[in-house]
Length: 245
Image 1 (cartoon, rainbow, N blue to C red):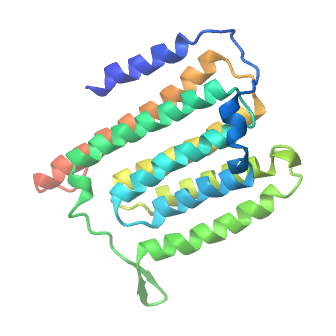
Image 2: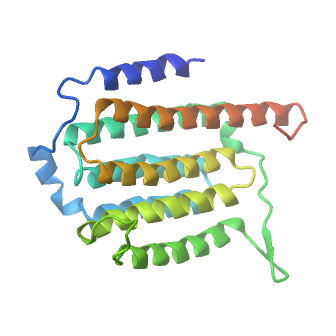
């Protein structure tokens, strides 16, 4: 219940944003100072952290990867929206990470959850290894698609954004399908999927309204709240000797 006031607080910040209903891009000194990290470098940073979230066993480290991923996302957003709006998206992302951190502490970071290995052709292979191989394959496909002139993608001048959003969506889906009992990791995968969809929606409507920003922020916060609730409920059931939601 402590999350509800915080969600309302962030909603008020977004709805109370000073300025016009739509804000056009602006220049800032700090934006130009990060120019060397933008484009392909930002896309690689975001997708590298996405792979780490899928394959690192420690949930603490995966959450640290999500924090870095949101930092990389702001570099991508700087190419399409006002830097102030990009900062708001960063704040929302980091607040989501704070919610997951509190949840992780409450459920003892999933200790005691045993992830069953996969049986592939009679060989027992760790799930993380399978995730890693599939993630690399998906990144290769995402890179090839980003270079194509497909109608559903952004213009060729935004190849880095195409690469990032296709990669985030595909890796997010991979994480959801292979997370097994790791509810926090599954939640992070859902957030990656949402990040890819949000990046696409923002890129096609760069002059975004404050209401649209508040709606997207609310979706991310609601997703994190659902993940926190399910993870805590699973932890309580596990302590009581029941392993179902």
